[in-house]
Image (tube, rainbow, N blue to C red):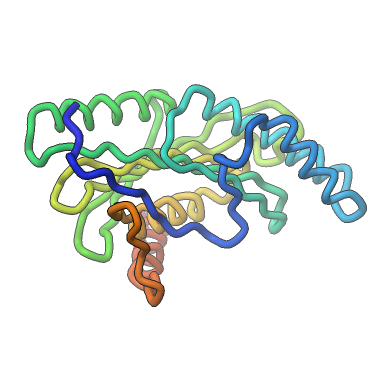
Length: 223
């Protein structure tokens, strides 16, 4: 693979409450510490459900390389763990090596989903067309109340087609697959590659990404 000659910093918006994985050296130690911080308000059942879900997510992402990754917990309508890993493949425009690098990463990412994935598309604020492939992974673990977990892989070409951005997403609640796909589309649409030392505009509202999420929800609801 031939990379771009200028080092670029990956920046993306994430929903409030996301915890970046770069700050987690040992997931098990971090998780126990996190649970300790919730002592007194987190029920035993919620603790059991979230612990199972967190371990399922860590297992699903084992061996996955990433430029950015995060974890998020929600408690309504049911306790759930969300994870997203971003990897950006930067290449020289239209080169054979570029196409090969992107194709290889796409194949490896989609292999996590098995043979039963479904797919949908979305359009970014500047008109690029992205794809999200997703699947439900059944589980007989009683702590996973919905009967399994969700895995999804989103891809959006970088501006000027200098590679692609990929997000692998996980949610421990099958009933929230709409929201997982919308979060992936939102994050891909807000992703920017910035020269070192340059910060994203402070006044960026992210309204285009919110519109992308709304349009994707409409596609899913009627698909």
